[in-house]
Image (cartoon, rainbow, N blue to C red):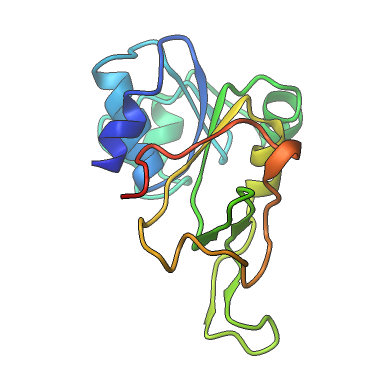
Length: 169
């Protein structure tokens, strides 16, 4: 349901920085239905990918095989993302607070976490450089917190406009 809601926010001609999982489902659904001219950009360096199936990772060969161009990861970040050429960036998180700060690092105290998460990846750059940011995350009280266990990505006034495809019930 969240992927469907997010896909409806994407428009023809937008350039979309896509992640794997729900973001990829949303972007590929939009490309196949309502936004055929949506440009999919993956962190691995593929621009204009048109995968025939959902990619398994950002390194999936289907992305490079179907892309209009393949460039280096530094070029994706410097020339595309940080230069303002990305209209929409997707982010996920384990926690989000009321200022749109995100935690993708640890649950619990950093020195002795209950869970260690993947970390920032490109999230700080996406949050500050994309035209808009769509955050796709589990809709639960444990996700929407008053205080993050760790701030991985800064939200608020320093970031792009934030949207969550589904509002919390």
